Image 1 (spheres, rainbow, N blue to C red):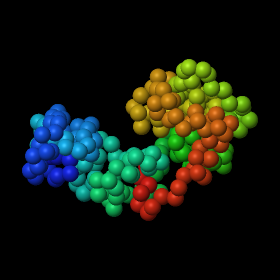
Image 2: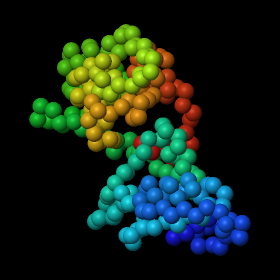
Image 3: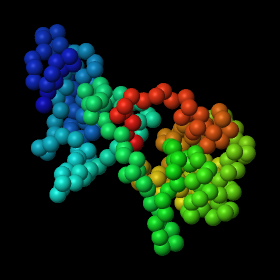
Image 4: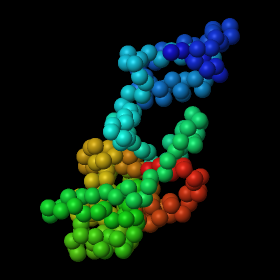
Length: 239
């Protein structure tokens, strides 16, 4: 499949454009498609996308099985990061964005032989409502008290050079290790399928560290970010 910047796939470019750069993208997965899309934004670039399978998309795959929609790969993205919804609108898919149905947003954690609902009010991995935390059976009384210390603990000041740390380290020292293990780690593992003790805050959730520095804690930082976020258009908040 070939295309030129400013021309739909399969159309013939003019001589000036034909004399431009020619780029071959190997693989039509999400990375290859993203690379081709980015290249086509540059004038005069001729892009040829090579894919060995009969379909494009790679890990992004939707199947219909017995009336159910089954996602073979990613099934959502965080609308709080504006590039995701922006790219969908750029591709003409803005009207297809779907907001999650509230009743289907429940997440469970197995502890003590039974399933517990994750408390409501989790934003960017950080619980922002104290009521659901207080009523939750996931945290012990000590864990709940330690969680609340985020409001009074002083922020760790920025270090010259490398201010990065692991996601587990940041959440553990602000909210306590019990909150990390029972609230944050289950969500984080579902997003990155990795160990939070090895994941960089700067690479995954830089807004958490920024919130600590600018607002004194994780919870205050997340709440401030929510207040500052512009109102989203209907249907533009998948999560």
